Length: 270
Image (cartoon, rainbow, N blue to C red; front, side, top):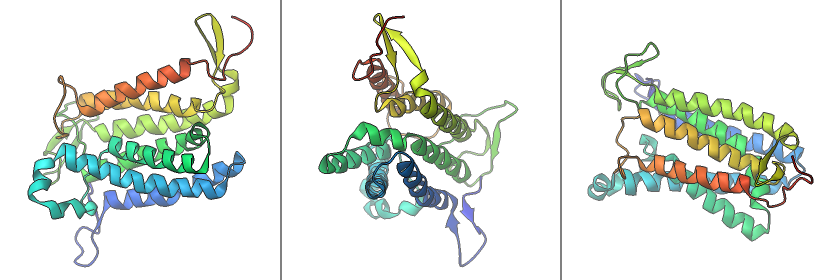
């Protein structure tokens, strides 16, 4: 755990998590811009979407933390809501906040959401994975006690309890970095991928396929990570965390999209 850069300095004490998220915010637009150029999409709109997603993601992630995970604390200490440099974000809150802002902008510009969702898919996976590295260094989103060889010892004084714990943050980061590679591979070979559903041969070339493949696989990894987490995340529902339920719902939506026949029938039967 390394929660601060220059932790012993009297003048500079930068939260590691904030630094990593800031680097993600800085790097991602360059990658998005490059991908927009390669796909002959509007570079101006790609940067506008980056800004909308960043703003919506920041407010959504903070909102869900404040009003779902720790509402009583912030009710008694409302000024603490503004201290975003101290952490306190929820990915799915950020995801839905970013999604709403992106949908609003694309609707205003009369652009296809699915086309742009595919453009952002590997970048979202990269951003999530890098963010989990920040969680690991900050000591948040920690796992249960663990005596396996890869258990990580968290020192006293941080968010995580002292002792050997499951490195759930690294589980999530490793899974999502693997998804980045997989998505980039799929992007080049989607026209070669097909499956059979209800007697029809289907391909994965329709817009939105890459995004919903990521959404499904992200849900798988998130549910697995949730099984090992032990940090407070708000009330459970039927013994499962809200993030587990959201992941399951997003997986079902993704399956429904992938199996739908919209613009993806391939002539002939298998």
